[in-house]
Each structure stands twice: as C-alpha cells, then as structure tokens.
Image 1 (spheres, one colour):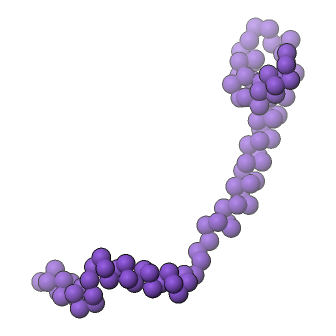
Image 2 (cartoon, rainbow, N blue to C red):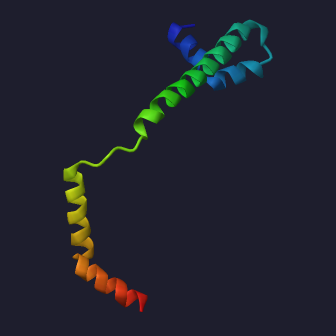
Length: 94
C-alpha cells in the first residue's frame, strides 16, 4: 500500500468505520486505532483553534471618523435629511 493511501485511510473517518465493520478486522486493526486517534486529535485541535480565534475576530471595534461620516451620508442619501425623516415619522404616526 502506498504511503499516500495509508495517510488518507488514517485521516478519513469513513475508512475507520469501514474497517470496524469489516470481517477481516484483525488484519487492519492498527489502521482503525490510528484513524480513530487521528480524527479525535484533529477534532480537539480544531476546537482549540476555534476557541483561540473567535474571541479575537468577533470583538466589537470602534468606528473610525471616516466610517461614521460615510454611514451618515448613506443614511441621508437613503432616507433624506433630518427634516424629511421627521415629517415622514409624524405622518406615519398619525
């Protein structure tokens, strides 16, 4: 068996389930346990990586002055000036 094939067989969870349900389990028992350990280790590594990455990427950041001006221009363009929005608000509440 090629090294690449063996590596795929160890990393793939389906391969370990196939080996577990195989009748010739004794001949490939080492693949099964290596695959289970590899998949379990990768799952913990990904969980640890997510725990380290998420707090740094989902934190709120203060808007810069340029972004605030851009947001105000966008709102004014989309909804009109303060007077226009006020008159619309009064009309909708009546």
